[in-house]
Length: 128
Image (cartoon, rainbow, N blue to C red; front, side, top):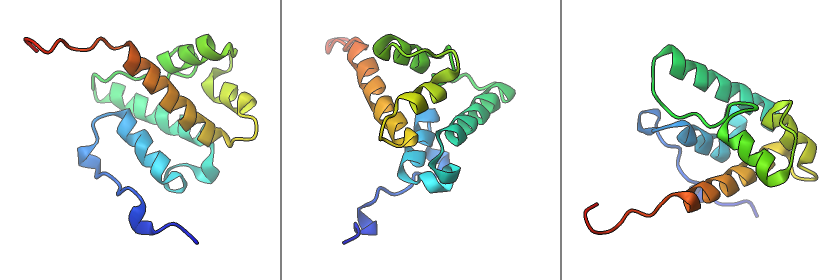
């Protein structure tokens, strides 16, 4: 029996997005709307456009998805030992195994975000 459509998270309106992670969450919820054929390469092109728009409009936002030198790519190299000479998309595609590359990306993204959160110092309760 198919899942109840009412169980699916509602899309967040554009004007409520804060950063690239809100975009990625929308892609995760509805990949067919954002990337053709669930392609990780299509997602990387979307992210490149996002990054270019930040620069064109002078928006100061951290962007972690540079193909070979960004923090996400570096984390993949350090934790997986993968070569990133052709970028994180190729590395994920070559190492995804039986998991579709887009699904593997979101699994890795969740793991990376958890590791970044674990490295963040916890604010002291007094005075913060």
